Amino acid sequence: MKFDKNILAFICLHTSWWNIYPPQDLAIIKTKEDIYSKWKYYLKNDYKEHKRVWLYMHTPFCEAKCIFCSCGSKKILWWNILNSYLEKVSKELEYFSDLFKNIKLNHAYFWWWTPSIYNPQQLELLLSSIREYYDFEKNAQFDFEISPHTITEEKIKILKKYWVSRITIWIQTMTKDSLEFNNRFQTWTEIKNAFSWIRKYNIENINVDLMPWIPWENLKSFLVNLKKIIELWPDMIHLYPFRPSKETLFSKNWYNYTNKDIKNRDLMYELWIKLIEKYWYYWVENDSWWKKDNARNEQEVDKIVNNCSILGFWYPARSYIHKNLMYFTWYDMYKKDEPIYMWIEMKKDDYMARYIISHFRSGFSLDDFYKEFKINFTDYYLKEIDFLEKNNIAYVKNWFLKTNINNVFDKLLFSKIFYTEENIKFLLEKFNYNKNINYIKKFKDTLSASYK
Image (tube, rainbow, N blue to C red; front, side):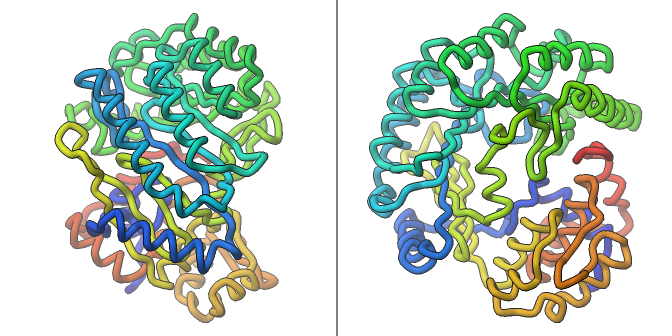
């Protein structure tokens, strides 16, 4: 297939912008027993060499759906659903635990949307179940996401009891009009309380998530709010420029994100960088801006750098078994008692593509690639290398793939050339590619041009 940047941009628009490979659109339904057997095979044949597995726990419930959100979640219809959900999660944790009884997991990650929604008893049940069924490395990072208006001192105390070592405070915006428009509820008092409790119980790291130019945000209010947050001295700050993808309520309700909005978002991001670096935050590869060396999200780095395996629970958690398959769970939370498992079995070309995409921005040794796959990279990917060199994106020097990438647009766009031809054809047909449409501009407009 001839490489075409418009095709690559089209793929970017219809696959995860986190550069996860393979795309989950290829998945087919399998049984829980099938998944169990695949983990069993990996642990017997590949784990001794790889030794990278971390646990991911997904909480797909919200009090209200944020208008900027593109993630899989459900609005709480009744609070008892959390009890039912945790009972089912506990069964899944127990079912797979026998496989891992002699293995120490590397990390645990509690995310989306947001796990601080559980009451103290539910939180205790969740964390105690994980500690009962699984063992972890001594220095494992337990990363827990909270929302300021659902966290309490009692909950922070429980997190400390179960070794949570890094907390992400999901803020995004503090502008009054923007909060109301986006179904957000938090106050400055709640945010300051969260910081105070986390430090009172000596939880090691605090990360804050922000999103510039959310609808009804403005430049002045954003910078004023950012300075207030910096004054609280979080250990890391993550910035996620607003992307009004088709999955968001913003797009579904036909709101218009104009070229002026895009320019203001990019300007806001650039000013944000200048302000945050003034206060001695530093960019760290594969993450964001930090003030100290151990503040980064170890799970994300592990996923990118080491292709680590991911044991995920539950809806719609995405899991990965090294050199074997990617799978995720789907589940009608109000009608079904069992999750639906869907998987994408990976061929050697898929695993090579995943390895390259994961290491694409930082580059990698061609010797390491050969040791992993017994394939000469420059021979196998001759056309891809030529395309990258012609676009001044990457080149091979001293048996190392180096890149000139300095923004997320180039990273996401050009890494797509390593998708297998079979997967590219599938995506073009499924999402009705039209060569007369400028998908490059469409994709670029969803990103902040300077976003690292």
